[in-house]
Length: 347
Image (cartoon, rainbow, N blue to C red):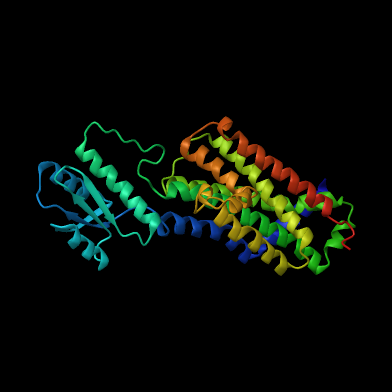
């Protein structure tokens, strides 16, 4: 056992002595959290709005006042006809026009160049205007009343970062030993080959926990994302997901023969597919059927679903049991295949 911990300490020293590795491990999560939390956002703010009305009734004035008081809309002009409003939108001086008719109907004219944003603008405008016309309407936004994009991005960033870092760094670490020819020396040591692999994985497991803590602290105290669910289950599910990522990294290391190949495989197999098909940016349900099948084998998809339910919705573990079982099955599969493919003689 003493020799086993000597291997663990050796691998930990390799990691901590490499400043570039440490920068990647802890710098990437912090930078991505700031980028997705503040820079890349789908929040609706300061939508340039034109009001179209031929006569200001008390109800119309109330609706306009609510639009102006909202942080979402900025009233840039008031015109008499929809044609004038359309001309302003076409000249890129406004994003949306609100047309008030005499029969108290409301028409929304939106610049649809960006379909996603235009849909959000209309949703926000309907919420403000309907509430001003009908006091009996009670509209409730569950879980995310302010409709902040950080609530959506933080669990997704957590899933993608843990997968990338754990799988990529683990695969590169094992392949580096093979490339340098030192793996044979490790395998002929008194420690069993399986224990050698476990010893190389443990430091990355500890670092992954550190990264997870950093992400959760930034989410709670920097981005104001709530941890509505049980912190215990959030940690347990995250631990299972980290083990899955480490197992996938071991599997990649068995296939790749050089660090460059391991890096490219990790990037090609994990980065683009996991970002595009995990539900991080686009809902899986809106994808073509073929891509939905591909998304079904993406581990981050299930982890992101778990974290959104546990962190944002505050549900219990029973409500994410399906996702947890799938993650556990994937972990078992990747681990068994990786260990089976591990060739002690490194032919």
